[in-house]
Length: 254
Ligand code: ZN
Image (tube, rainbow, N blue to C red):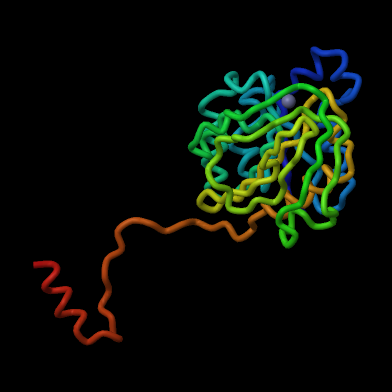
């Protein structure tokens, strides 16, 4: 069973009536509800900004296979120490799924190394048509040619990310913009997926296609083969396959 933790800044759901009405248990509550019922995951662990160390202690991260991240207006309140700890664990093999405005979060920006906080946007309730670009990708499994969200916040190009390793989805918005809405990246042993839908004033995390994509992405990002990497200087050993080796070695070490 895959061990999933979701970090949610959990601010809009406590301060805005219209968001609270859609997500009475927080966006993390809506995501936990379907992941816990899906059958492939341990009960999802929740981390929020208000918790000590934002709920992301070393112990929690060491016991997390895939971390989901939702943040919007409180990115800068996440401590650098916790952000660095998340980035380190991703490089060691923990999966990371950036949801919606997580593109501007500290860990995602550090992982991308670009100005990934920059993109066009408009809070306008445009129709969003999410097109599958990579039919063979496991994250698109079970999704038709496209699916629609009747209202979403518009994100448009240009999105200042590095060239994705896989471009799984591109979304068209009824205002005319297009956006690379489902992208994968690899950083050392960590698999990263960014997925754009999920503005807090729309019921996006109840949509069955969105839920399917998130569950697929967690399975894709799970890396049970992560290992301790050996790097650094490696002394040469006598090599029986090369009779000249010892002679060459003597020259090198002169
Ligand atoms: Zn938003």
